[in-house]
Length: 350
Image (cartoon, rainbow, N blue to C red; front, side, top):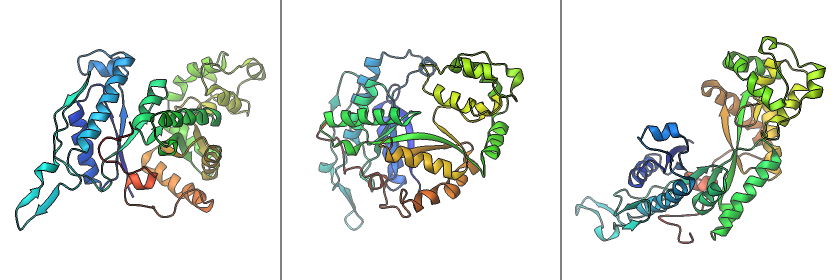
C-alpha cells in the first residue's frame, strides 16, 4: 500500500498554494498523503526566489503561522458540506464552506479552500530537523519527525526532546513518532555489498578521503585506497568530537578493511549505513526500536530499482518473523497506520 509524503518549504511558498497542492494529493491518494513541512536554510535556495534567507526567528515564525493557516484552510470545507445530489443539482452546502480570515505577522489568507475532506480528513504533518526551533515546530504540529542520528543514545535523546515538546503543547507524546534514518546495501555477504557500493560510488569514494582524514585526525593517502590503515595510523587516530560518525569510522578502520572499503561502509553518509546481509539490517532496526531510539525507520536504499526489492525480500520477512513488522495494514489511510488521532482543521489544543 503506497504512501505519498512530499517536502514543501514554508519559507518561500504561499500557504494557500501548499494547502491546495497537498490536500489535492491527499484526495487523489485516498487519504495516504503527508506533508514534510520544513523551512529553507540555504542561500542557494533563496537565490532561486531572488531573496536572502531570513533569520531563524523569521523562518520559524513564518512556519508556525503557515502550518496553522494551512490546517485552517484544510478544514474550511466543512466535513458535512458535501452533498453531490444529482437529483436536485445541489453540489454542496454553502453555509458549511466558510472563509477563515486568518492574518498574522508573516502570512494570511481569507479562504476558504474549495476541496472536501480526504478519507483521512487532511494530510499528516511531518517535519525534519533537530534544532530547538525544530523541536517546537514539530511538538506543536507534527505527527512524524524524520530524525538524523548515528547512535542509539543520540536518537533516544532526540526522540525524548520531541516528545517533551509535544507534551508542552498539550498533546499526548505518543502522538509524535520519531523516524530514524537508515541507508542500506543488502547483499548475501559483506564483501559482495562492499563491492556493489564501490561500483556505485566510483570516484566519489576517493574524493571523500580528505573528509575521513579530518574525522580521524590523521593523514591519509588517496593513492593507497586498497590498503588498510597502518598500525601507526590506527594508534594515532582519534575520532573527531565534532562529528558523531567518527567513532564508527574508527571502529571500521580497526577491523582491517582497506581505505576504499572503509569509505564503502558509508562511514560519512548522512544516516547509519548497513552493508551486508538482511539479517544485519533487521538486527540494527530491532536494537534501535527496543531501546526506545525509534518508532520506525526512513529507509534509503542504495539504488531504488533493486535496493528496495532487496530490503523487502531480505529484511522485511525477518522483522515479520520477530513480530516487529505487520503482515497486513491496520487501516486504509496513512493516519490510521501511524496511529495519529483524528484531526480536521486546526488542532484546538495548540
